[in-house]
Image 1 (cartoon, rainbow, N blue to C red):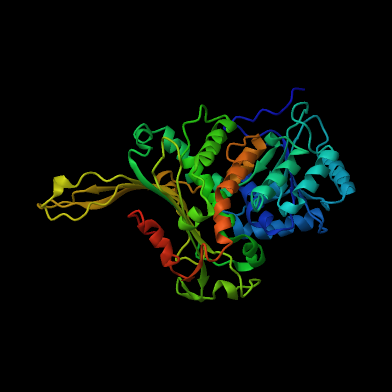
Image 2 (cartoon, one colour; image 1 turned 90 degrees about the vertical axis):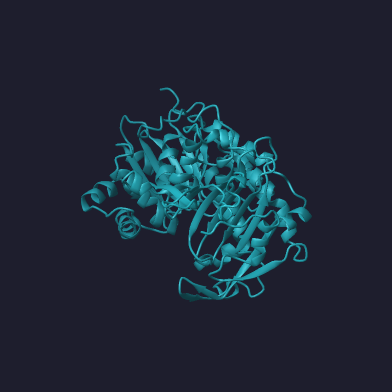
Amino acid sequence: MAPLSVPSPSNQNPPATVLVIFGASGDLTVRKLIPALYNLFADTYLPEHFIVIGSARTKFTDEEFRTKLYEGLKKFSRRPVSDEQWAAFSSKIFYQPVDGSVFDDFKELKARIESLTEGSITYNYLHYLAVSPEFFAGIAANLKHADLMVDPATATRRTGLIVEKPFGHDVPSARQLNQELMEHLRESQIFRIDHYLGKETVQNILVFRFANGIFEPLWNNRYIDSIQISVCEEIGVGNRGPYFDQNGITRDIIQNHALQMLSLLCIEPPHSLTDPNAIRDEKVKVLRSMKRHTPQEAAAHSVRGQYVAGTVQGEAVCGYKEEKGISSTSKTETYSALLLEIDNWRWKGVPIYVRAGKRLPKRITDITIYFKSAPHSLFRGRHIGALEQNCLTIQVQPKEGMALHINSKPPGLRLSVEPVQMDFQYNQSFGVASSDAYERLLLDAMRGDSTLFTRNDEIEEAWALLEPFFDAWSDKYLCPLHDYVSGTWGPAEGDKLLEQRNHKWRQL
């Protein structure tokens, strides 16, 4: 039989697949993975021959595991759960206890898989590591030694590994983790998941740019004045306090989600939209082209803050240092704003402002492209105020859509100018709600399509770009930590970062 290393076409269902979820007793499986798989099943995107095996150290029977998943599915599925569909879907779900550090458990897992896949059909194996990164290398090694992860050059089945963030803490740790995984797998077998890349609006950036001839000629420093990317949350750290306090908002959000969106937004046209590496090559070029700062420059081009007690959406909330698991002396940032620049011919001189924060007024992820202003001399002396800049806004969440902001004359006998908005939202324009990001990413991984997954060099370049900022922030006198009241848009210094170049944050 020929090797199955070639990805399935994106408009076809994937081939027969066994999906093993390590860490299946955790929150991610209940909240995201099983709801995503159920909705793929309901929409008939899964292959006819498909098996899910949950795996963790916790002891469950198959039925106990299914019951746990069913209770979560009723809460987190984007569509109502049908008893008939659940019965059919759950018949494909099984549970096998595995300790990731015990090789004998992997031999038992292999035996269980083989007993469930007996017959003439060859199944691909896909393993999802919903566990802490410290366990990635050990599980990968045991999978390889148990022949559950095989070399794609000679195998008759495709095998792959999906890993969740965080992928490293800095450049050395990311590089070490990449090296550890690649001792046992090829890069083509590793799917580093960033769920933002599965969001409908983020995927549409490629179609929007390259399928519409009116935008690509304007996508450069001759016409674009500045770019803003905002990832805002109204929530605090919740039960993630100890984890978050070790990382901060920059490592948690900007290093992955924000920089992935930025690199996709600013790529050069790839030679193909179907070759995963064609797109990822261009994303890496963007990251490599970004201006590198000294720590002193990074301090001047960044602002960081930490929320204190305030009111969010009418509810009084505590400050960061009062959150569970947070030290009263913590210096971890819950807000950061960076001024970045891509130092190439297309983008030279275009400031890119990136911010992320917790306990802001609302949850929204927004990309705004500001175009350079038209000359105002034509309207001089007509009692018309300053014309607003044209801008294109891409809202990634919670309401996925795009809007083009232009100036127009309103009805009436006087010449006046008012800003208007031409927009569309996915659920209104297409009549259906967008799929969850995990649905698209799980389906692509089963197909062997790594386009929307991050590559090893992407990860390392993103960490290298941010390294000077972390160095600057390690010295409180070089880059201080500012307080901001919960329910506001961050410290005032975040606004001043833009005012240096006569810009301001878009009102969200």
